[in-house]
Image (cartoon, rainbow, N blue to C red; front, side):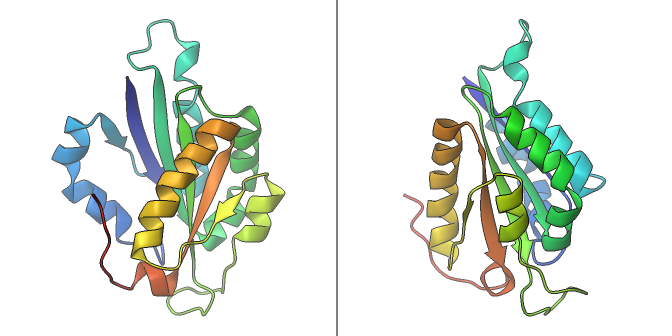
Length: 172
């Protein structure tokens, strides 16, 4: 009996994610998933952190919450304190968190080149690096399982050419 929660801050290369989530609002609602965009990356990370504490309330409606935080590369740097505290606090027993970092290493549409792995490593978040659409889905599911089994947030680095690319994926 779990629910989902998504919060983040728009920016390159994940700028279209929030638009996609808004378009899927009825599907999200039917599946007990709440999308709450963040005012900035820090507040979004703090909200996701809170989603992992549902087990602290005796009146909790769900036994756990799987959650996703997302932000652009500079936002990962900016949110280091929130990410570190949230990760060190851990996840709910039936929860799990995927921290999606949008990196623009070639500076295609960002003011600065970005590489999130050093900051994710600094705050204790292991990271996965999908190279295509299929791997985003596969590594995303694997990341949630890693999170649930380890008690840690798990990073998913999405670079510009993958975020802006296209491809086919098996969603069976």
